[in-house]
Length: 548
Image (cartoon, rainbow, N blue to C red; front, side):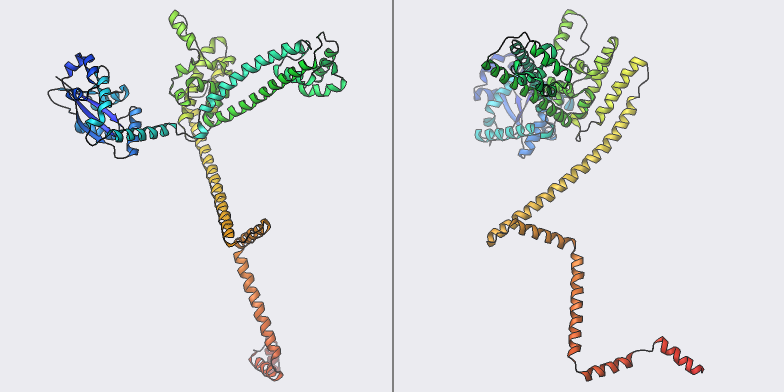
């Protein structure tokens, strides 16, 4: 006999249902599908065994995150340990909707798990009648719980660090590739259009961007003079080429062109030049984003190739999950499946072929170096994905390893061991992390100080508005300087104050002495003379008298 329990995860909590007459239900799947819509018929097949409500919205979010990742949460573990029978005559089978969480539960409890067949139809019926099968739960409360948990789950999934978002890299590399195609197409159109008037210019200037700038600058070739050589030289950066353009314009076989046609050609050339300039800005933006999001991958394989790998994988996290064998042929899927279908040789490399390492390797070593490079790219992407303080230390070390491996294939020089290189990298990364933390702490301190200063100024402005006194900016500056001086020299100010007070007391004493009568002065002098002790000189004189 088989006893089937069905686990249902709802926004309000976990529920465990018992299915009656499992063997008959499994054989009559079409009848089960028909009975799902009727609550009375469905209750005759399924009954609620236990319900575990979530204590808070945060607890519900933690549980649903664990389920989505295929992890058994402590609440779910406790719930099943309490309510799921583990021994008895009937064999217990647990039905779940997700195979991933089913595998985790099977590993945790050792029970048989069923995810297909009649379980899917039973879960559909439970989902439909859940609020009626659980006492005290209304349809409105269940709907609110689902809505709140849905919003929380979405916010938690979308929440990310704005400085380390790889979506911008995916869009940037896609736009960069599109711009390359568009600029090439538009440049060919300018060449063909302006070539009617000045066909010799194509042979002298083969570069597309430079050709468009020259078409915009020259305009009508008959208007070129010896004075135009300097402006031509600024564009082509070569005096000989500028002179060759001038000579070709004088003996050109091109047809004459009307002013209106020339205006359109110049306008189109201007747009192509602007697109080329924007492409350079976009490449700088991509470089800066790669240094923030995946610095190690960029240091190892380059900004453009690293961005293409991230774009093809879908995200940096997906790329970090790929094994090295997948990264090696990423971008060559058609060739791989064609080779598997025809039983021919599989491709050795995909997008990583655009790296300089594979181009530098000999033909017989291209497969080896691509395999080694894919291995290092996988390591770099995982470090970038899961590290908290991004730095390019590991990428530089991995690049050195690839260089040493290339040298080993060419000269036979034995490269360093991976463990030694990684020890150096770990030490350097720790030093860099300490330095970055110190800088961040310093920046945070400055920011707090600036905010405090702004807050004090705002409070001062509010006080002035209340009192009706409006200070000028100059008065504010003076007040600020005085406050700083008072803070810096509080001790000096107190010393100066004491000194002034002492001087004042001495002046008052002198004034009092001047006002005293001469008699009193004389009396005071005689008293002072009596009180004065004998000087060393007078004592010496007395001694000399006695000797005589």
